[in-house]
Length: 184
Image 1: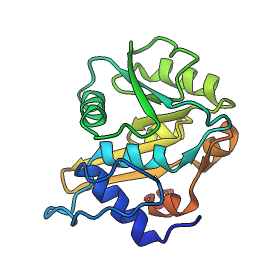
Image 2: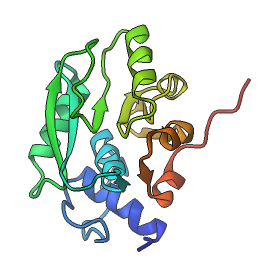
Image 3: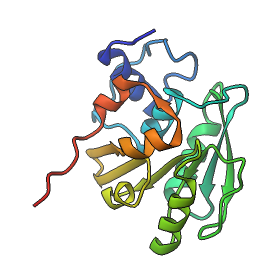
Image 4: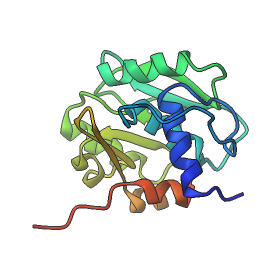
């Protein structure tokens, strides 16, 4: 079932304020936050919720870099959800190969060369790689969050990396992604 774009935007806003933890075709009932901001954890949860893995018979395992402030926020938000959607969290060490069981890897504070090597190794596997900054997408990451300021939270999706991974992200969510940067 395809959702209208307005419902997806509402879902992201609802998730960022803890307003929805249930079905992907439900529309949140909470109002948009006064600041109009979408937290990075709301973006992450929404993109994961609207992603289909080749084997959807188990909850997705979100592997978060231990010691990372943003990853800690994501884990805290996940634990605060009334019903964890189809997602469980596990901490991993930076600069070490994530366990094969990880369906989603949140890279934070990694050595750039090690990160590029691991992203290349994951390229043909159904693993959603999430990182910060547009360079993350250039390095082969799938979801690239840009946090310029509290009011300017955007994301990009590397469509080539999505295609290679075999993951299916709802096209309406992809429309919310920031347009790619134009070369200078």
